[in-house]
Image 1 (tube, rainbow, N blue to C red):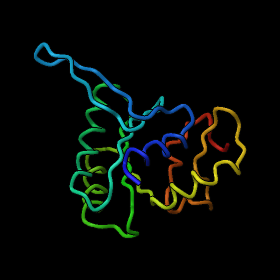
Image 2 (cartoon, rainbow, N blue to C red; image 1 turned 30 degrees about the vertical axis):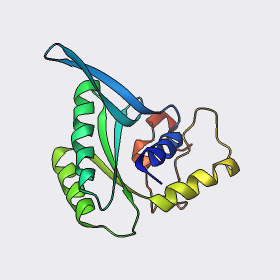
Image 3 (cartoon, rainbow, N blue to C red; image 1 turned 90 degrees about the vertical axis):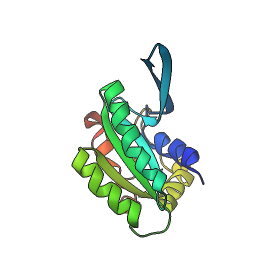
Image 4 (spheres, rainbow, N blue to C red; image 1 turned 135 degrees about the vertical axis):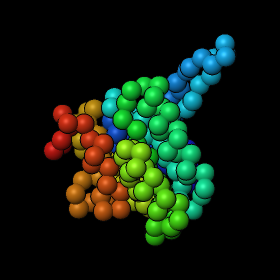
Length: 152
């Protein structure tokens, strides 16, 4: 499963979020834009895949999206092999130094949570984030939960 598909699943967990949002800016008289993988009322979220140097771009993209939107930047690295490799290690430390929230999610946990979504009933508009004890140990997104949704 690729980054775009995983972003769509993660965005679906966050009720009210939108995937692949464009933000426009002008430079040298030309209109340009950047895409944000997932965006909520509070966060701009960029995804990266483990084992890939291009994951580093996620941090840059999240920080630039913060500049354009004023929202909190988040980087989520998708763990496909079950261990913290070179790029995850780098991203964890550099994100912390830059003040960017860094999260790591297992690809399998994302897929399992999405596959079982029909078995859960939640309030309309509420998020479907994995709760404690579910798959949260492999994909803890609780810090993205809106304050008003806490405990739902």
